Each structure stands twice: as structure tokens, then as C-alpha cells.
Length: 82
Picture 1 (cartoon, rainbow, N blue to C red):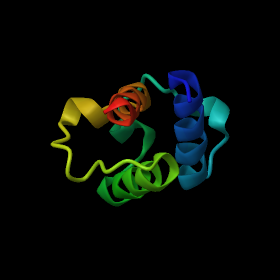
Picture 2 (picture 1 turned 120 degrees about the vertical axis):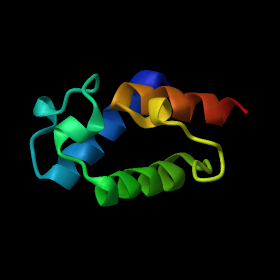
Picture 3 (picture 1 turned 180 degrees about the vertical axis):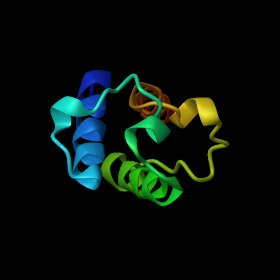
Picture 4 (picture 1 turned 90 degrees about the vertical axis):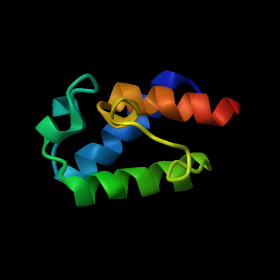
């Protein structure tokens, strides 16, 4: 699974949660500026854990790891390699 495909899945999931077209979801924008509150962010993290089979909650995530969709995709890639 490539970083691009991870980003695509995350963009689609965020768009679904926000009930918007995926074309308007900017992978470089901070997640909070897209309209994701803390509950929706948790929903994204649960999706990541289930979709990619990784445990994010116990992996010492920092704000930078989940600040944007791009950052979250890099985090997923890094966790899948370990």
C-alpha cells in the first residue's frame, strides 16, 4: 500500500464523515480546519486502526503525527513498516 493510496482512503473517509465531496478535502490542511472535532478525529483514528491493521493509540502519537491527512498517511506508513 502506497502513501498515495493511504492518503486517498483518508481523504475519502474524512469527506464521508463531513458529508462533503472528497474534491474539497485538502490533504495538506490541518484537520481541525476541515471541521473535524475531537470526536470525529477519534473516528478517523479508529478507521485507521481497522483499515490498516495498526495500533495507533499505544504508539505515542504526537500532534504532528495527525495534524494533516498527509501527516497521518506518513504515520500509517511508518507504523506498517515496523
